[in-house]
Length: 169
Image (tube, rainbow, N blue to C red; front, side):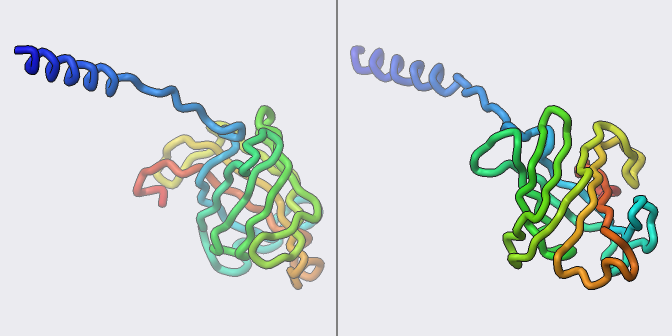
């Protein structure tokens, strides 16, 4: 009988202990972090498109995520090798949803990259499926871009946050 009571109390303790859930918090840059589908267009100094999708890559995947410091003032932008093969750390303002970088060193190729006027706009765009999603836009200039000045002054990156809907991929 004692053995049964002992086993029952252990089982109950295990059940009640397993029901406790830890509170999982987000990162300091949670509002800026995401998976994005973006397009790249060449633009002039006024931001006017001079060449749509100049390299014919179409819509590609881009990630924004926190650094190991997990502070609200810096994030990574990483194209996972889908366009120029760049990963760069940029200054960010998580409360204003903005980011930028001057002469930031690319983690993949060691070139310098400028990212300007970066922002995330909550619920500001519609995806191909018609769903409302967050929008991302920024301008990028690569040190090794031989077309700067001839065809564009910088490249505009714009797109929408991943929705999980098959029609948006």
